[in-house]
Length: 135
Ligand code: HEM
Ligand code: HEM
Image (cartoon, helix red, strand yellow):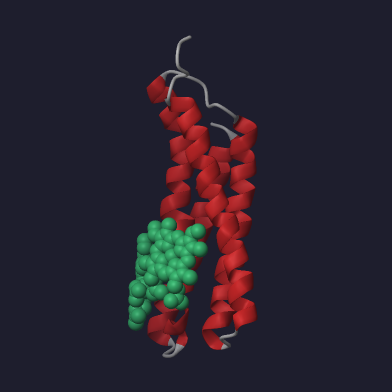
């Protein structure tokens, strides 16, 4: 298993733990539901999507019978996506209590990094799964 796959699986489990603890706290501490957007992205992007990235990197090239196009690009994608998600949830979270245009732009910048991570994953997978045209 590559370090990218392990990285996505472990970081995904960490986001899930934080996400479900937040969900329970929402029910104990009224008012904290304002952070539902943080909880939603930690669970859905941090766990669901990141786990799919990790397992996808391991299993999809094997289904195709070809090595992953670029392990180096996958490792970059791991960092870009994690930094993007962490920044997005931190600044979306602060913005839920103190809305400001400044915070929104910072959150958007991290969101764009997360989006870049998605693009890198799709590119790496397409280069792996779609064979080059024969000349
Ligand atoms: C122990 C587990 C969990 C608890 C106790 C919990 C609890 C909550 C609570 C209290 C809210 C706020 C609802 C409101 O707006 O008042 C919420 C929102 C949400 N949760 Fe969870 N949750 C849990 C796990 C999950 C998981 C695993 C996912 C996704 C895989 C998830 C996805 C969402 C989403 C998307 C929202 C936002 C829904 C909206 O747009 O209002 N939750 N959750
Ligand atoms: C680049 C990636 C993404 C960015 C920048 C992003 C950003 C956002 C923003 C700004 C909101 C509105 C939050 C608010 O009203 O406070 C939102 C809502 C939501 N997003 Fe995302 N999102 C991304 C990816 C995803 C993905 C991949 C999923 C699901 C797998 C998802 C699920 C949701 C859900 C369920 C909501 C409504 C949750 C709520 O506010 O209660 N997002 N997203």
